[in-house]
Length: 199
Image (cartoon, rainbow, N blue to C red):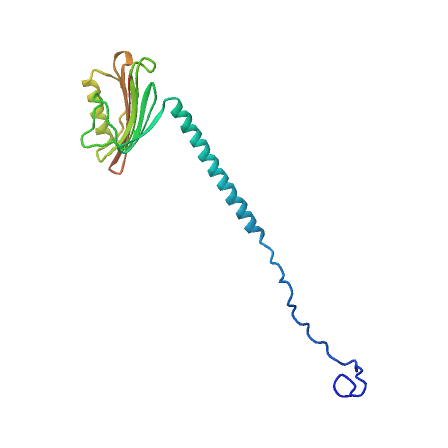
C-alpha cells in the first residue's frame, strides 16, 4: 500500500482522510433583513402619510376659508386674517390704538389686535393684547399706567402693585374702554402684558 490506495488494484485502505468540501459556485445565500430596518421603514412611512394628510387638511381649510371670504395677508412683522366682519392681526410689530398709553422707551414684543367692521361685531369695536419689556421696576410701570388711566377718566377697579409684580385693571363708564396691565419683574427685567378693549 502506498498512501490511502492500493497501487495494484486501487482499493481504498480505509485510512484516507476526508477532503474538505469545495465551496459551491452556485446561487449565493440570501441575507435576511433585520427587523429593526422594517420597523424604521414602517415609522418613516407613517410620518410621510401624516405629513400628506396634514397638508391636505390645511389646503382644504384654506380653500374653504377663501370661499367664505376670509383672506390671509403678510404684514410687517406678522400676518393678518381678514373676514367679512373684521380683521385680526398677529405679529411683533403692531399699530396700537391712539388711546392706549405707550410706556416710555418700550416697543411691543408681540401684539394681537382684532377690529370689527359693521354692526355684526360690536359696531366696529376693537380689542387686543401686546407685550413689552423694560428695565424699570414693575411698580414703576404700574404707577405709570394707573395715572394714565385716571387721566383718561377711567376708573381703576383693581390695583395690586407689589415691588416685583402687580396688576392694574381699569375701565371707563359703561365699560366702553377697558385696560388690564400685568407686570412681572425679575433681575432688573420687567415683562408687561397689556390687554385692551373698546366697544
